[in-house]
Image (cartoon, rainbow, N blue to C red; front, side, top):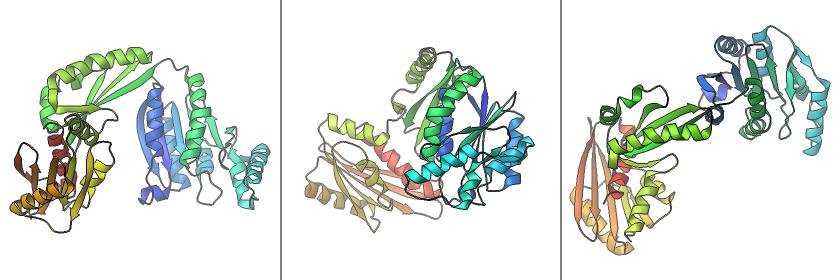
Length: 380
């Protein structure tokens, strides 16, 4: 199968000033085309470093996609870097300049002289008109590899990928296969326990099976390569059934399903309305529940952490105040060595306290505690 590498360009990404969403989008699209992803790189706005990254990728990839660095300013160096990487100069394209001027006229603006930089591309490049922005893209081809330079603005990049680049890749690579993935979500169990149960499946070649651990959750990813979507689905289905058989109730959903939605759907099925009280989580538990649909009526964020006795007393009063069936109280008490987590629950049937010791990174304790609580809610 053909391979691809993505090079994201922008010093602002390296400094953490913006979040790179382009790589995730591109990787997903390439996977759907049946193109293997070998490497993802982020490089600052430096011509020599970008050129070196491209030259490194030329040795191993069939497709190189860059995003960013196509603007009009002096710190938009992608055009020069691609030219340097393939050993050519940049050249001015009059038709690109006319496209840029026409775009500005539609915006009711006048281009400045530095916008002319965007009409330069490496010699021999195939320019790509950008109907949704002012930065033209381009493709530099060789016998073994194609370098595709796309704008960094997500809306522009996604438009060009959908309307121009995907058809180009299908034609150039004669793509007749796909890569499809299914992500199975588990909660209430650790990565090592899951590995102990399905470790033999992780040795398969196609489909492949891998684990991704999060705070209080573990994902099982099944990825299949095949000639068609239907064949890929069939390959995944067989392994997915085996995973379900082995992991059982540890599994709560797949793909876009969330733990909070599954928990609220369960409460809705038994006719219970939920309210929560939290302390030490900065409102994150309430935000998670509020983002889902279902019988969540609201919650309260306390500025002080409660002892287990005080927590029970408080949520008992809060349950009466909100007139709900079930109320959950969740508080984190930091310790020098571990986080003490108290989870209290009052339902029409029981009054329960779950004292939990968390010894992982303190910054992950809120997420672990929330997922632990949601896992309890989905199974009561």
